[in-house]
Image (cartoon, rainbow, N blue to C red; front, top):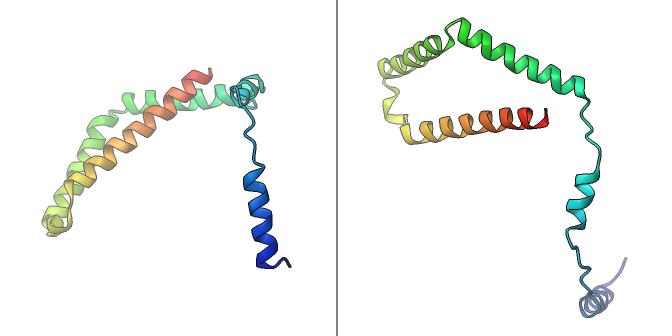
Length: 113
């Protein structure tokens, strides 16, 4: 084990002899040249799954069902007197974040194809 004096000497030496290596966007160029690790069939399978889910959601009237489920959940909360602990601002923020994450994931899947 090194004692405190050795650690201090090493840290002083390294701080005085530190040199910055210029990056010149080396990392970005390397990352751009790496091959895509996701096989084409996996991306197609994911795209097909998302597309099928969207078609079924629309075909089976998913929007009214979703709105009915949310309305019923809020109605039950109001009946049970949970309005004092309900923070609509936090609920709105959570909804916006979830919608944003969903759109971002969908955009990334489309951009890969």
